[in-house]
Length: 276
Image (cartoon, rainbow, N blue to C red; front, top):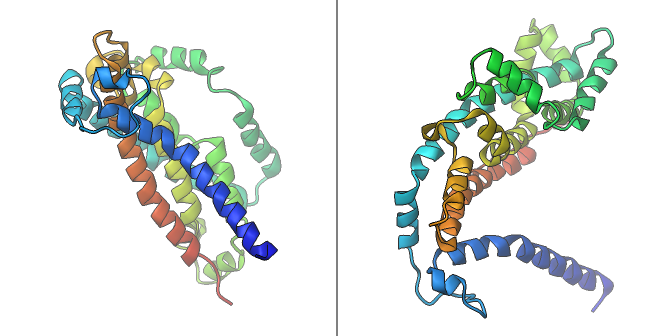
């Protein structure tokens, strides 16, 4: 056996190990959600249930209105994705393609905001929304997405834009195109891989957001899926197997969206480029 074969075996073995480490917690949640309370607390633990208690999910949906919470979450996610995709790509296009005074300084200032923890600005931001009488609504969770889309997203898109040759811009200018036409007709189709990555990160971030939604949402009928799971967990009458079923309900939509987005992400990387 030569060194190349040994190297491949070692690499694949590590990949299998890491895949197991990442997938085992999800399997444990799924396994726990299909047991009864006595089985989930048994020792040694049951790795493979002999009988699947699918009725656990029905009981969870009867205790907590997860379908309404999922709908509420998408009411936030959809406009946030629109805002982040539009404003972060516009800002990145400006930093990558348009010359203006102190451009590097302003870009460095934007990047520095990544180092600022969001918890630091939570109290003053909440006070500002309170003055506008917009608390206990979805607007404090949606409107910030339309003001830049986040420094990390701008940075990611801007770095991707720098890899696209300016020859495309110059050709479009010779055809009479302006900045917005270049942005919408030339750049955006090519930046799709990075944009899909940004939207995936944003979706997962909003879906898993707990603190921001806890701060701004007071009425239970406006709760999101993260807050809904918290209410199930805080209920002392909810046993562990029902909490795991609720956790699985929360995990599945995010995993499905990620898998769909990953397919388009890979396709975009394979089809994007310039052929000389």
